Length: 167
Image (tube, rainbow, N blue to C red; front, side, top):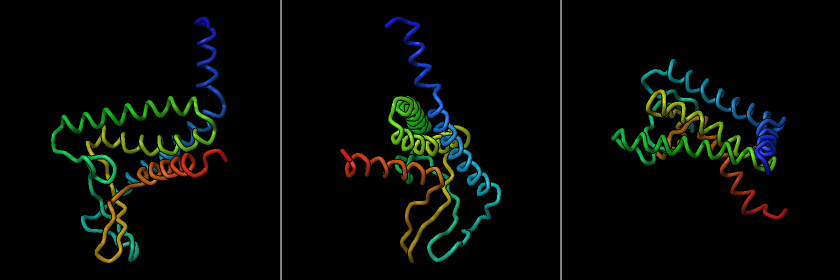
């Protein structure tokens, strides 16, 4: 395959109509995450906001990855984790472009959430988490809208690959 044909193939993969729709989905998820985080950051009062008996809004700043894992005080570790997350997002973009339609949907949902948290890591040096699920004294990890989309995408991928394989 000559160089011109390779360029045409790349253009066909990247710049097709379907990939554009999934890019719009990624942007919508990212914007939804940004709007919710900006609202919480700008309007949050120092104490918890009680939504109901199972949900509080409680702003915390997460320097780790999902659910506060790998939280470290050193900037080197933080920067390495941020670089790793950025690399994974770029790889997921590539995988999305070459994937089948349902996989494009799954990866787009994950990327939309991952970009929201990646943005926060770059501009705030931490990710604002604010949704606190609890039952009596038991509290789940505090999370945000981006985490919901990342989790939904991963759960959908697991279900597709382990339970719906070959159907």
